[in-house]
Length: 238
Image (cartoon, rainbow, N blue to C red; front, top):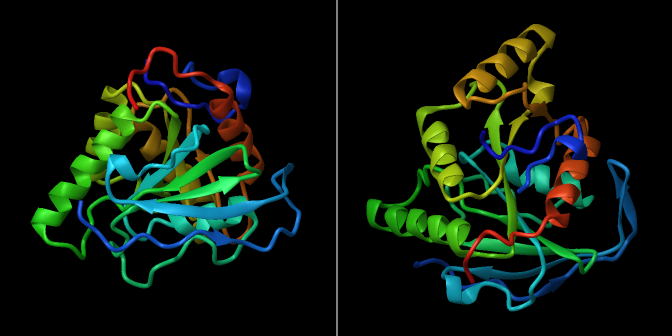
């Protein structure tokens, strides 16, 4: 059975380059906010990494976010952390070339990965980035799971399905999330969820979220926090 975090709550959760110069540490305004029932007292951008040697030295649990460019990944991460512009939302899909680490409540990292497909980079850089992401997912022992976003309107492209299967092979738990709930009506929602369930061989329909209307953030935080609480005793790595 694929190690998905199920949408019905913690009881169904799983057991389990070359790039731009890294941005400097950025402390954010420490306004306390509650998102989806989860209280956030501090959020900060810690660093960018373009190689495994550049990962944070601080041994905190990590949850990574991945998906095709323009799927709404950055917007979702901002919504989850209760910040508007902490995770940069690029007007040019595929522009992000590094892993960006955000420390939440000084307890864990949310990690923004480059968009799948990397439309705006050359083949050589695209290959290096793909290898880097694969190595990170496979070897980072602090990684508790990966949230993979699929646009509810499209149901998943071939590259999405291939990427998810590749991640599953590493043993890393994958949580499929349908994004952009606010872009579809009820009929389109039902159709999209069914298609994603079929395309990714899920036991249940995935959770659908909206960064704009904040739909699904409470359940997503529950799943993230459960995954963070799990130890990766069977995974070997950095």
